[in-house]
Length: 221
Image (cartoon, rainbow, N blue to C red):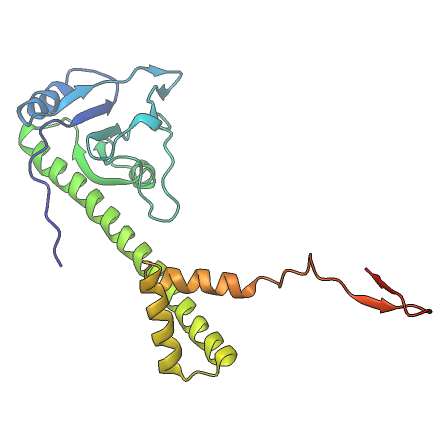
């Protein structure tokens, strides 16, 4: 199954983290032609002032200058290795340490400085679509993992029902399927809840035990 690639970036917002020196005008002009607005966050004490929590993955694109070491502090998802929004690295000095820093920030595309207008669309296309493809792949893997856990619950529920009700495998599965349909739940979720209910200890709060005392009287404890 192939995913549909994004080709129109109109309405996007480019957040360019760099020290302005004139070279960025080609980037800004080309982005404007593509319908992408440009913002330059203030850099104070070597750190770009970015409201990371407000970043929107379907709109924002971070352009990060690799020559500014430590200028951006964003958390990459430890499982998916994705940043909160697509990151395109601006490369001046091609030192391995600076390229590695951009990769660790989740960069999915690079753009050479000084920027030439003809290279912007390709970099934007690759950066955003690689980000979207990785996000989609991660979601699919998560879905497969949830299904795997769910199937384990189904197997455990079938075995438990066979033991407790004396049913064969097909009969236990059919009963669980009927009950899940009656509860309007998918099979995996119903079986997880089924196991949770069966695992609870019996309620003995109202149960009393009679002890016969001398004289024929009983005392409840």
